[in-house]
Amino acid sequence: MSYGTVLRVAEGSLAEELGLVPGDKIVLVNDQPLRDIIDLSFAMAEEEIDLLVEHADGEQEMFSFDKDVDEELGAEFTSAVFDGIRSCANHCLFCFVDQVAPDMRESLYVKDDDYRLSFLYGNFITMTNMGERDFQRIAAYHLSPLFVSVHTTDMELRAKMLGTPRAAELMKQFDRLDEAGTEYHAQIVLCPGLNDGSNLDKTIEDMMKRRPNALSLAIVPVGLTQFREGCYPLTPFDKEGAAQVVEQVGKWQKKSRAKSGENFVYLADEFYLMAGLPLPEEEAYDGFPQLDNGIGLARSFISDWREAQAEIETAGYDEPLSVEIVCGVSIAPVFQKLIDELSVKNLTVRLRPVENRWFGPSVTVSGLLTGADILSSLSEAEPDAAVVVVPRCALRSGENVFLDDMTLTTFAEKAGREVRTALSGGELFRLLTHWNDAPKGETEERAYMWQSNAAYTRLEEI
View 1 (cartoon, rainbow, N blue to C red):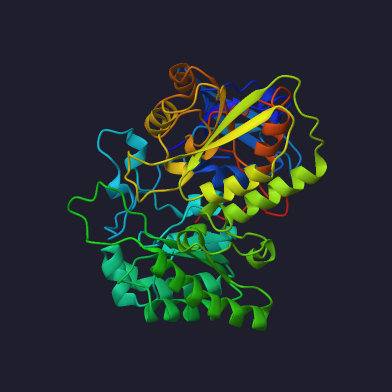
View 2 (cartoon, rainbow, N blue to C red):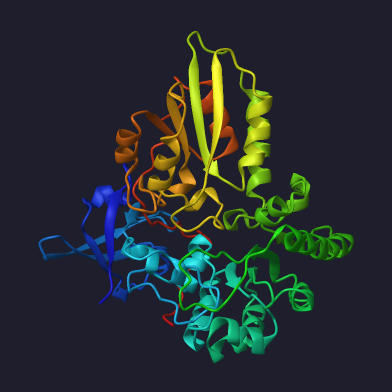
């Protein structure tokens, strides 16, 4: 039987009133088994609750109580799914997990392909492992939007790229989602020589025809590391190739905006940065529907910096402060331009773009930097660079740990400097201009909690 393990209990919550503590396991709600926090949230929408809990010592206890229909339990869980995350059974020609260095932490080798995580947290899924009951549940629970990896609408090519004949069922699966009124964001991992060129044109056109259920289409370049032994031969985009993609997609964006007022299809920042082209203005991203996918992240960072710059007074420092900012190679020109404009009394800022030696120099984003690579780069720094800012996106989500399992504390000890983290442009601006007053930027352990919509009512078990 599956159950949810409590990680934290919110102060003043129903869970606290019941006396629940970390380690307790939620087993049943009104005799209903729980597959995930979605089931739990819908079950807790009832006003009369019988909650079966198993404590750490194995003893089970039933709590029976009345509650408001929209009152949440107020517990956070160690996992969003209680019956195990669905893993990916595909053999994608471009899979990044297959290119991870050996002997790294186990979680880096996990391939999730779970529609529940797609709905809850925006994880992209291929839908190749979904069956009839899954589509029925999506429709019954109104799980929308989902995030779907399309890659191509040529079904023969998609089956080849994903390494499974199930991949050729995508269009029929989209039909099911459309019938249920489910909306979805889509993405393409663009691989030179496979799904680019005329194939990309066809995919964009086909996905545009699926509006309004299709909300957006993101295009990201294939990521290639130095650990590609035995993998399908792929080449990365170069400056010329990236520029061609920008031009090609720009024509579709222009056509879409003329028809609907939105671009619909968006390119990852890397295309513009690789091509040496200016980033689109904020309006071109139409509210950043796929920001977590790296679409418009640089432009959002700039806008956030500018907003903070307009709001925050910069009085300067009484004593000299030297700050070194760590970032990936690709975003460095964007950061440098902002830093060059910064004028604060007694503040010296240096930018340190770090080459990714762990995954290979073709991996240039800040989020895939390791503690070891950053330390190696900092060892070459000038002595007067007293404090360091590292990108929080390089830390494991919810924890102060780099990809190579180095903790932020260990990193700071080895660096021999004060270390802070920053994520957004506004946060970095505040940190640089008010170092002594800025929050430390510590992260918390990952927790899972989903608030149900009060309009939802209990549905029959699927």
